[in-house]
Image (cartoon, rainbow, N blue to C red; front, side, top):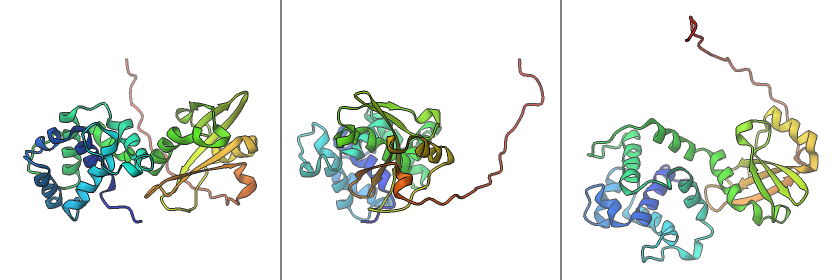
Amino acid sequence: MSKHPHYELLNLIGYGLAKFDDTFIKEFQCSSKSEFYRYIVSLGVAETTGVVKNRMDLFDPYFDNNRKGWWQKAEVYRFRKDLIDTMFGNEDVHSFAEIVKMLLASEGKKIGITTIEKPIVRTKFKRLQETGMEAENYFIHHFDKEEKFQGGQLTDARLYGDGYDFQVDVQEHSYLAEVKGIRKPKGRIRLTAKEFEKAKEYQSDFILSLVTNLDDIPKLVLIDNPLNHFEFEKNVIKNEVVEYRSLEDLY
């Protein structure tokens, strides 16, 4: 299944419809969901009104709105809600609608509604679109369903930039988990120099955690000692480092 060109934006719209119901569409000056669906289609975000409604159906099972939606696949697609919760879960209906309006406008959609540009929203949306962010969020919510990590305690190490994303402590044993996302059922990955060295140092305690098929139904695959299972080719990339230094002492 190919990823919709407005995948993330449609997810936000579906989330807003499911969570806030009619109060969400009123923020767009629409009096009914049908009118709102047509409005989104007119902006070129969706091909048909059914596409918009289906995205609402996907998120309906997670909110108390008297609609069942796609309850049969609630666990399968929960990762999409979890990801949006991470970025925008604390917003009220007005703030969330303003975020959607701003993102629509930033993509060149003539929404006919005045919006206020907020850089942090654009930054969050950019992160929402990144494969790595999506994969890491999926791992956080599903790692303990894997036999190797059952009962484990997760420690986030991403800010340290030391060659792995998480430490998972299972009883007295510590594993280092490096998460990589793949949009399709299979694909290639890259390891940074630090990640490669950590994999070489920790061997079977270094767990390459692949989240595959992110464009559809993700699957978490754990591979211990990845350097023993796969061949990696060294690729030296030379980047120009640009910095700006002050020409005088600051205070």
